[in-house]
Length: 40
Image 1 (cartoon, rainbow, N blue to C red):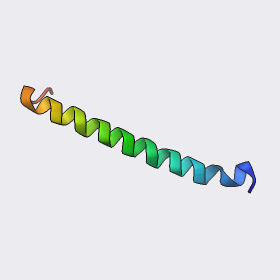
Image 2: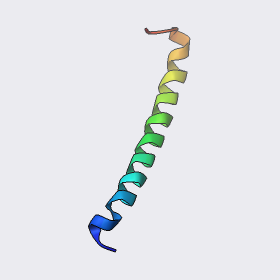
Image 3: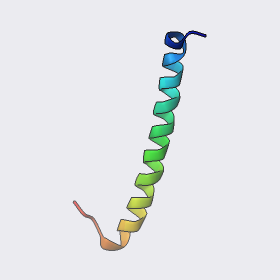
Image 4: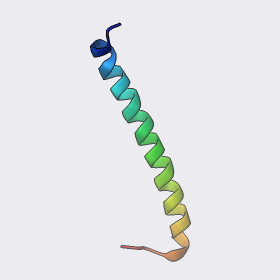
């Protein structure tokens, strides 16, 4: 498979992995901030 042909698939995989990482990281931050109350 050519690089340009596989590029969309790799892009989708990267976006899914990055989104999952950010969601997990955000959830951890939110849980640690619950004791402090709303920050905004």
